[in-house]
Length: 429
Image (cartoon, rainbow, N blue to C red):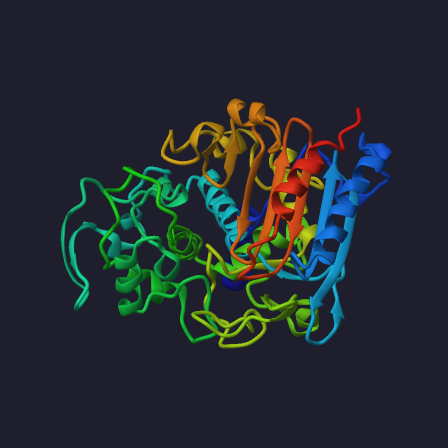
């Protein structure tokens, strides 16, 4: 009898935590002819030519580009090479390291737990990760030995601060301030991702001991706050971060190609990180990260800020859920009211200038940005990744644009802004 009661309670808990069915029944993304979605096939041809020209001109070694409108994929093509050294051609379902495109997924997971009443956005993170209690702000720094002095922060770091890059945390090896690069390296902070036997709990607790760029809430500094939130999700949900995303987000949405570490049967589809070497493209060497990630290593570090790999279609599926107000294929991931908050201006004028602001997960286009031209309608949301991937979604036009590449050290790549501009001109209704 006790075993039956326990099973009942576990089942009930699983039902409470599972994503709920929705009254809305939008269909999964499917391919359709452009005209069925109000898109001009002749104007889509301009995107096709731009991508072909970029490969021919050696701007990038390979591209996967996708355009979806009104829930229909109207353009999905692959160009060039996934790996020049092995002569492997790019395919539409190839997998890319999406780096900072992971951030919006982690933010979404945070807001899923927020919807369950697990916490308030303005709760101090120290309530859940005590190591962040009584944060300190950097006051002085000595380059000769990396010693420093600090002063007490005026306020605690909150969940909202972490979501909006206003916590004061830095970003280690890619930080714009050399002092923080030196401090993070000395403390052994893991940036982006790793093949070594490290956990996010270990790295986050080291991070909590270091000084901040500024007082929490005072400025926008791109940071490892989303890595902190990956561990926060583990604490609040009681699940490993990778399992939470798989069970609560990826499986319900059918994002079968989005992983921290690729299953063996998907590894061959991973696109190589490449760099120019004269007029050739070669594989990027091991630097502060190992390009063999996410296929090799200990597979224990789940970076909420940079660790995921995905396909263009999987990421389009994630964005379509947002365009649908938090629902896809009859599964409610977020409420429409929560999506409204996520898209709201959370940072004032601390980031983005007159054309954009930052919400809880994305950069968002303002009226000034729309009027400037080339980046979408008011409310268009976007971001990109360290290895040269970009995306945007325009709620007014119900259109998604994703362009995936996998490069470092390129200077002449113009495909990002051209693609976004060209997607807008395809609308024909």
